Image (tube, rainbow, N blue to C red; front, side, top):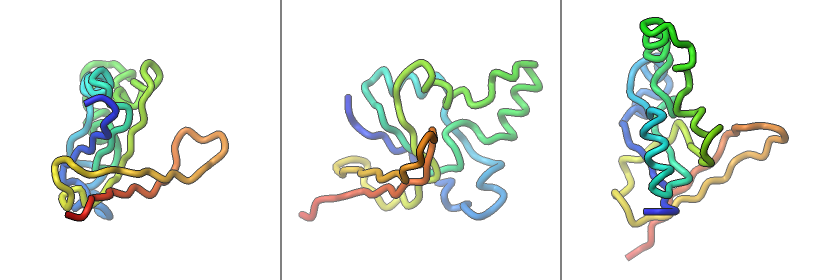
Length: 126
């Protein structure tokens, strides 16, 4: 739905602190990112090292196609369409599929395009 925050649970947060966290996994494509934006989503998050595919996959794809523009494709969607994404979320498996609110409190860094943030899910008691 428009104006929803979409959190993508991959389970990769279980590898945080290990080499596998950076080298294995999945990620968002430019097409998937644009699709979410076209549905009205402006804030999205994921529980892995970054929004895009892991770096080894980007390197392999760029070498196979001789196209260095394949790096950070999903990140670069933000140059064409307005959205924010959040990386390295944890404990998404503790959340229901829907029915909760998300608050994001980024550290203000002058001139920065990214910052650490505290991300909080709030569920109503009931």
